[in-house]
Image (cartoon, rainbow, N blue to C red; front, side):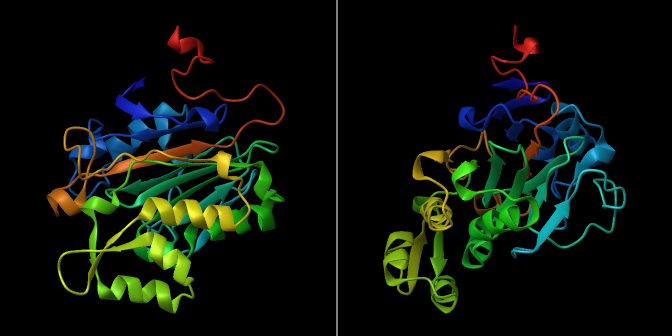
Length: 272
């Protein structure tokens, strides 16, 4: 789809919750640090909130959850230099949008079809070893009463197994985390180099969501490799330090009026 700042992706199954995944054409895609205020202003505007209502965290490749509740006034927001360490943000507040940034890691958005609460999560291999998808599902249940069977999940563009060769320490982290032999067999395949494997983050996300109770047909993986399409996506594995960043952003659905449509979706009058 074409959003105000450039091409973006949406997951039709996640609608009518407002959300999108940005691409390299956005300002963030050309920023070395991926942290320019003007770039995040574009992300906020795309979901019809101001920059001060864009809730972000300092991502640390873990599974800590940041909770933003409706009516909360003391949560750090986009412009804060003291964003809390977290890789999962959940909220029932339709006045804000939740955003995470990636450049190969899996950007995961979750929405509760029944209540409209949402989550945005960042999951690289460390986050997947820490079971970020399952932690996000559990946090929505604990904090907002979401039932896994009501959740819809959308995993945006990220690096594919064919382009993601990892060392033995990565597989070891999953083994140490208690992942089953069957899971390891699905997520890791042998590489040509000794003691190296190809890691399939897409399969890990899907399996972890299914194990957490999200129905298989409500899990949607973009299956678009960030390292394979240089004109469209940012990739740290491909470009190193100069790589820009992409955002995944989502906004809780209003419960007292009509839902927010995704930008320029068929339900959005701006698309006509």
